[in-house]
Image 1 (tube, one colour):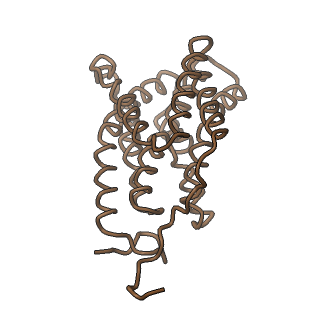
Image 2: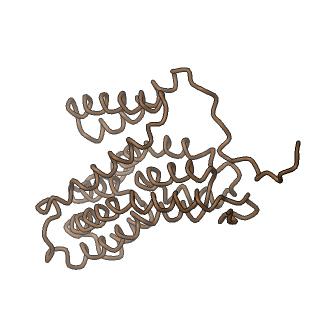
Length: 257
């Protein structure tokens, strides 16, 4: 049985593929959603201590939409850093999203510019890790699935941010409860699922080694940036099969061709 996809004028999606992709997305997203909630509270507390109002803290989550950048920004604001330095640092932290968007670009090839722009705004580490395997399972882009991948981490983050800004002092520290390990563990599991060929394995190993080495020699943020760029750059130098069209062929009519 097949069902019409969420995208206008798109070929139908086999029901089994869509169900499997959504089921995996929910299962993989459970730990990510819990961790996003825990870190959202911590961000809310940090923003409040940096002098952010409820509106300002929530506006940063809506407009910046990047946890690492938000933590870095509120820390620099609290230290009285100049705005240009804050912009440059958060820009470097978000440079990895260039790689995410490049990996997802083939799946958005036939989408409108407005949809691509909106999708780019909500593209996070978690959304990428959830959406790419789902698209591969489905066989093409699916708007509702991508929206779900973006919402699973974003909704708990926004709710928890409000809690942290308003009454976070009444809640226990997530690190004391051990919740802080959920996010890296969940992301590591998703990263393993993305290792589907020789290039991706080389990128993961190289990026990890370079990132750890640079982080130990300088700062974690610098290690993330350098490792995130070095891994894919080296992997691209490895010969590989030509990329395939992510859009599956139209369903057969049963007529000979």
